[in-house]
Image (cartoon, rainbow, N blue to C red; front, side, top):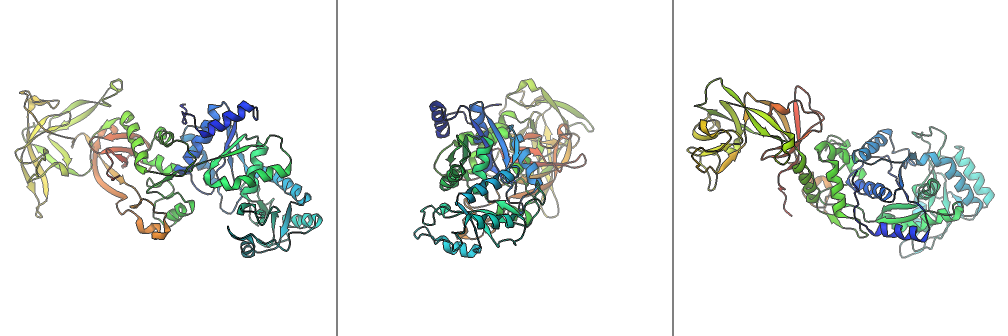
Length: 553
């Protein structure tokens, strides 16, 4: 497997320095998602950084599910996370759970209590917010802050045994209520939650907070470099404090932060993504308009293109916003090089070739991919009745229109030259059929006398095509920053044309047995893949990307 992060970056510079100084003699990383939703493109950046960094140094990257909040977590999400990582082509060393460390974390909490560095607090959540202070004002100490070690031990034991209700008490670290870093103002490290856990069942009714569980799990696991996004930079002093104060580890991990991935025309908030799923704005987590990895996979984005995108944006320390067109360009580049070609007519208009023999059909050989002759050729069937795109005919052509119109000759891709003779309309004046004649000597699309023909169009014959449903997907939002609540709800900016469903499309018979995920370039249309809803009775294709971007810069 190719290395994703091919060039050095500041993370690797730090690691090189640590190895050179002998701080560590190996590299171990981890990817620690919370299983409370599906992974999105932002997670792909973290996955690539965590796993490829370990690969570069011959180390190991573990998958550790941060399941410290059982009210929001589900095994469905765990399975999806594993599938997404494997789809991107990475392999974890071990699959672990934060809940596997619950006994150890509980002992760490007791160590802090015994050192006078943790206490049981009776303040309500609202009171704690009031006591916390602001960025410009110090916080106030809780009246319960100076309980004795014995009392704190007893209360924490009783919390664990289920004596108290949810929210009645918490365990807090005793640090500094006047610290300029709000994270250091006596953070909560355990809360009561009478809920069953997907891994530990009903063993616990107290659960550790992320900021407490995360650093200690890293250290216990043997992680050398804890790589995380920039919003955790202010948490680093707390990360180091918990490891330092427990005094259990001689060689603790080093936390290094990188800029998270911000991409325009997208929403990556798990809460809002879940809201869109629950309210039916999208069909599910894997709706091809979603920025989730499973949605991108269903839309036909190749994993290699996603990794190419992550590689192109690089690893930096400064936050920035990436244009969505870049990932579409990466997908387009990949599929242009790899996707087999096929012809599909999405909005069919019947064409009858009047001088073609009745009942005759012929097989034409067409390249599967013009840049990969080793793939061979495919066969398409030509007949008297064919179909072209409605937009490929105009009764009264505009200037520089070189497709079908009365008296004009065009090239049918890989077939013949045909000349438009006449057309039929219905009672509403809509064109229903175009009549043409063909040049029998022009098989392959070349005029025997060398005459110039400007227009080339694709087609599908009535004998050599099958019906299909085609779903034209586009960006879900019409504005660059739909998450900007100062301008209104993200629901105000939904793109009404993000999904257009076309029925009665026609595709070559040769791709009728394609399976979910198979990808093609439909000539002159774009790149499409077979959807998971597709059956033998009903073919369904999703548009992955058009041939060219239709969005302005």
